[in-house]
Image (cartoon, rainbow, N blue to C red; front, side, top):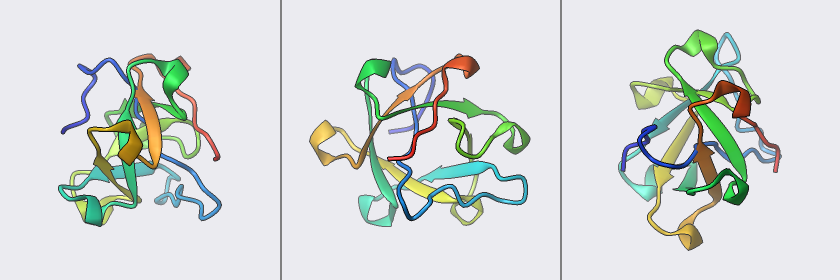
Length: 113
């Protein structure tokens, strides 16, 4: 399942004490969607409403617009360029994190869980 803004949900990744926000030179949070759950750092379920989410994400078009810890994320084109590997699951019970995607930058909210 590809993450797109056509879904009625928002995307954000789980932040834990291991500090997933290991940014690149600009401190950007870069993610890559893997094909298999075994390749992922986190399994993510996309919820329908922001109130159901652990975190709210706005996906930006360029790495320079991504801000570490803010909810602004950049989709890496290759796995080797990403900070975090995610896998989108079909059922909430399978997820490490519930996320909501937003088209509105001001609604993005990072989280430390």
